[in-house]
Length: 437
Ligand code: ACO
Image (cartoon, rainbow, N blue to C red; front, top):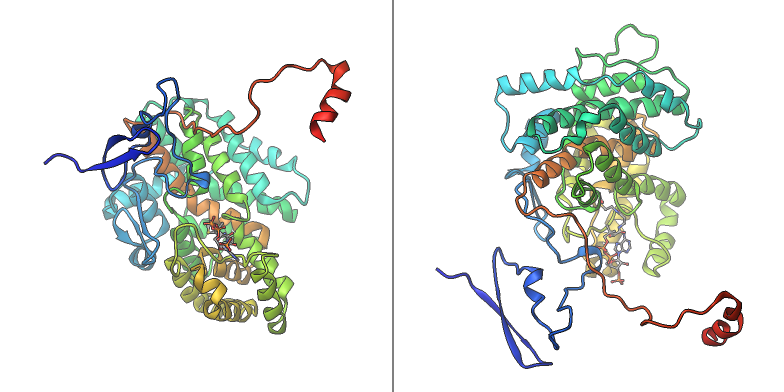
């Protein structure tokens, strides 16, 4: 059967063009022949913030933002969060299938084998000021790994890429824990390979003088679930950054450092930290109405609310809300949860939020749990980055194997001045000032 077509008529010329429809989309390059005069460049599509532009095909994560559905490689996030470990999900995201028990055993061992970082990394981290933000330290140390693994430049070899992916998944918790220990003035803790991925991370963060760190199974499970929930989210800002940098054939360490940088922003992964700052600022139930008023007047945003893709309750926020109670049973209740729930209740009934379809996103409740576990707000985005590392890498791998891969290079619509005559510096004051008035 021939492919369906989209017919476009250009009213400037009365010419009709037929564009092939594939996967409910048309190729932007098929717009290029549309022009008024033959010497014109041709038509572009204009899409600031890429709200309606697919930059790639992908087989990793499916989201239906209207229905609040999230699936990794076809599996619903709810089932993965309940029945898998983070490393199992990491395997699924990277390799496309859930591992068998034997495959998972090998995979977990491989991850453990790569957990340590070069001793010089400690010196590198020591160079940061005592109050350096852990995300700044993480971005820099991930980029620095590029200098330790020059073999990573061989991006054409699948075997080599797999080695780098393994290194990154294994070392991210170590770098994150070292950044935290540095900010606390505490000695760095070596990995304990008898513990699981998440338990070992807790060990590297919180072990003091005890000979063996014994993590709470409930908190370890909760953190593991949080890593699963953050593991991938298709073409978000940081993943697109990973793909953009990767498209220039840069190595995965510097590409991932760029992705971490994008995640750091408060409109993206930095929102979890911003939610806590916001709750601290609101402080009490009585302050909520005046805060909501400020939001509605456009003076500020309700952090942890709204999403480019979800126009329904973020399914990850639902799962996080549920695990909060398990965590609080161990840690005691974080009083901020009541403030957050009340904010949510008011917002979900308010016309401003209803009309714009603004619901809690993954970051609305995660920070409250992290804080109850003992994390400082500056660490929240670092935790997000650990979980998301595998998602960034799965997309990078997909990009490397994509026969349509080209360097990412968007177009622009130039609206600046036309060619004009150069003004020598001695004549500028008079001539340019009269033009500017
Ligand atoms: N609080 C108040 N108003 C909001 C919020 C919010 N959190 N989010 C969106 N709006 C309003 C906008 O002001 C706009 O209103 P208008 O139509 O009257 O101008 C409308 O809703 C649409 O908002 P946009 O900014 O156009 O939506 P966009 O898809 O570009 O932005 C984003 C999505 C960045 C997530 C936004 O909702 C936001 O800033 N949320 C708060 C930050 C946050 O929680 N980020 C984490 C997202 S999840 C993640 O990245 C892991």
